Image 1: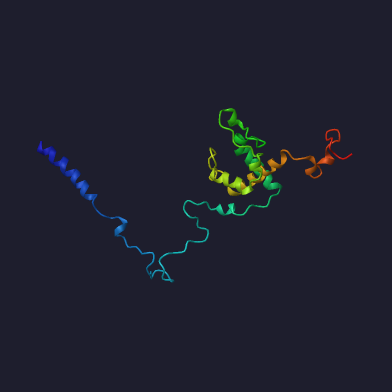
Image 2: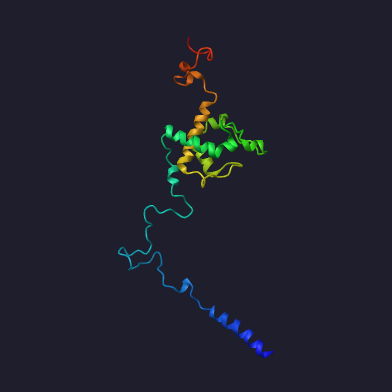
Length: 186
């Protein structure tokens, strides 16, 4: 019995002793941030991060959220593509909040054609895409900042397309036949 007991106690004890060496970073040489360091020419230990360094937890392209791009046909086309791929399941193709999820029992999202959202600046839509709102989760990690602006521009185009008067759209009154547009000029 003692022949088996001694090795069964001795072997684990030896293994435990080998694990007791303190090789943690507390014993390594380090530099204090605000102390002088002779390693660098400027004598400062704290180093300035290289240009283009992204803070942990931040996106490198967050700066793109600050300045909206100029609205042109290419931006609207990109906005349409992204809107149809990402937003239509909830908001529908025309932005009335009648997407497919409503047919499956989810609550209606707001219509982009409500007065409240018609009066909202484009930055509001970018912020909602970025941070989410209500039951809509955030899309910051799914939609690039430039695409968020493109979607916001397309939402604005959707708002203008619904309820616009023929006279408000340049050249449209001349393109519609008189019998289809009774309010047009003779």
